[in-house]
Amino acid sequence: MKRYILMHGDIRVALLVLDQVSGAVTAVEQVYETAHVPVGIPVRKGVIDRGVLNQWWSGRAIPASRDGIRRALAELNVDSPQLLPEKCLGLSLSDQYWICPADSALSRKRIHFFENPFSEDVGYILFGKSSAGRRISLMSPDNTTDGWLKKRWTVVDGKRCLLKGGSGAARQEPYNEVLASRICERLGIPHVSYWMQTEDGYPYSVCEDFITADTELISAWYIMGTAKKPNHVSVYQHYLNCCERLGIPGMEAAVNRMLVLDYLIVNEDRHLNNFGVIRRADTLEYLGAAPIYDSGTSLWFDKPVSLIRAAAKMCCKPFKNSHEEQIRLVTDFDWIRFSALHGIAGELRSIVKGSLFIDEARCEALCKGLEQRCGMLEAAAISAKKTVYMDDAASDVKKDSPYSG
Ligand SMILES: Nc1ncnc2c1ncn2[C@@H]1O[C@H](COP(=O)(O)OP(=O)(O)OP(=O)(O)O)[C@@H](O)[C@H]1O
Ligand SMILES: [Mg+2]
Image (cartoon, rainbow, N blue to C red; front, top):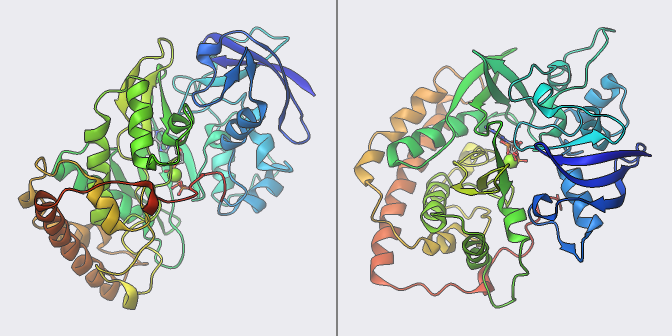
């Protein structure tokens, strides 16, 4: 057991006891600054809900389902990914929370990863490299980056960048990330720009950190945890209601844009941790929606060529069970310049050109499917003008905890 102060930037939030065998918070001995407790973690009469705090803390760790994690843990000589966040004092490149040993007076300015160097040892090991008996430093933001795809942080021209791989035989996710950024660019949707990189023959997407030393990403899951959802209120409406109560500007328009993109690319995994909002960590001022990120699980990424069809029934998240239903939540299509999508199939073709993983037949099927989705979006926009959609909770995604696996 070890005592730590949960810090938010330079602000002391709470005194915690961490179990070094399980990595869990076993006690919260004191709360110093309720306003700075992570969003969505209930504090009642000055007492933090320890169950939700532990869910938040374990959500900072690499999931046990991460591609290649078992081998990497063996190489690192660490029993569980839950133990890794403590090794880097909980510091991350997506927010400003960290843990300071209670008996030390560490200065965050001198250790945080946004402006200080960090070790890439964990990243290399997560990418299958061996430590070759060298001493390994675990001061790495990779310890506190979730998601199931293989990934690592690196520094390119002084900028913090996330490299992320693909899955299965087609390794399609990185190409999809790049395509999604190009669609966003064409439609004027605020987004994270992704580009391609090849490492050891495998395709990866690369993007810059969209968080700075002053800001942080708060996922929709935690925004929605700020209030209980009444049964009759839909998940979509609950999200917008929570954002409004917190005073987050521009959220309806931002959600419209995300839903349009996800309809076009048939995104199957826009779970509640794959979108969110940004706030300033020191003033707690909400700045608005986070730019679109993590759109790779789309375009029939895990389907054989024979099943790549624009109208195929595909999984849909986060609000409705089907893409047909979810696109009807969009309250305004007038901002879309459909002509900007002309030639998008050609752009996809150039992104996958030369891929060892996506052959000609797959590429052609994807291009055809994508073009048809553009037509379907236009039809959905026309139909929305003619009919009024009444959202209700009946067709909602029922359980979408990003932590339930
Ligand atoms: N550019 C970025 N800047 C800051 N934080 C980021 C960035 N990209 C991703 N993250 C953080 O890293 C986490 C994992 O990244 P991402 O969602 O892209 O991975 P993934 O493996 O595709 O996830 P999933 O399990 O949802 O498929 C995100 O939830 C987010 O907190
Ligand atoms: Mg993700």
